[in-house]
Image (cartoon, rainbow, N blue to C red; front, side):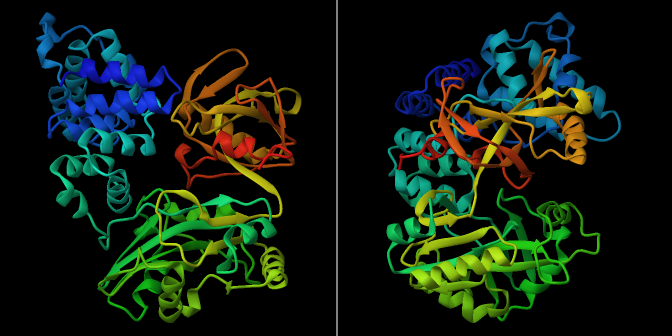
Length: 508
């Protein structure tokens, strides 16, 4: 398969907002890929390199003379997916003394072999700025269509493997290979997500009497795996942080079991047992040093001593969890009546937490999906939005990047949809951080604004939304203010434009 075919499909996907058209273009391309090409094509069209980040930025690319090395023209037939990926693998492998010169030579030869359109595609892929709308859910459906595999089987394989490329390869090999992807202790599972509820009553009415209500902490999501004495701790983005959290490792090693996979949250507490600011909890994810101790609170058990529980109802998983780790269980109440549910919510708020999660006791663990089986209830409206840019401040804020441009995720895979701006809630320390950090994510700028690649997620508190022709989504935030940045989330975890629109008065 040629690189040009991948570039053409990328352009076609970016040019339409129709999910059906996007899926058709992707599946048509994937059908034409060989077994050794399919994982690479899938990775590229979801904005990832099979080699991971390989240390090439815009500055490195700008210094490259794109003319072919020594004036020799590379055969146009060589610009296949296989050839380009081989050059990227060689580039990634170069390190140590003399590697800078050799990496520059490889990159120069690669870019010299490409057309302008191909060069632009590869450049954006290298720096992590490829946004053509092929999000994970869309690619899962395209893989299923291209390989004639059941969509549910592809989704499950992706949930358990965490790898779209690996899932695509298995789907091409057939149903047996796809079904052979199972839960593996030590390999993170994509986390199950919750949808926002309008109120406690609305969540209870939606889910019925067979529910559990749990505290929703102002902490960070963790997933822990243990096999014997070997323990791994992962974040919600599946990044391993084991070496940074020895106290969590010690807790898991002390549980009365041989192997386990647990889902939960962690946070730092004051001496009075109240949650410390979220930023203090996140600071521990990068370093094991410091006086703050992280405390785990588990709310799900996916595996125990050789038995997978992921398909069991939540009630069964909670029974196992409460027997295994009662001292580290998230505060919860099962089958509450209306008064008990309200009292549990009030207790969570009084303790300094965000609110409660209301969950269906009959639900299996559906990783990576925001279904209605788990619903979160908070006393104020909050949204996780993507930072699209920031305007230079004036007056006291002269010299600082201040007024944020905020976008909601397009559920159909397009670019984030702008829904408002805010400069409220930005303390001096946060203004200084933004001014230093934002240029690292810059896509372009003008005299007033620095525009960013959609990589940073910020949690916004707001009074509601209103209809507005000012922004392309048709809605605007009311009295938005910054609560905190979410380094534990990516743009794929941001709230969608549909979620924002659902907050309109009178809309369900």
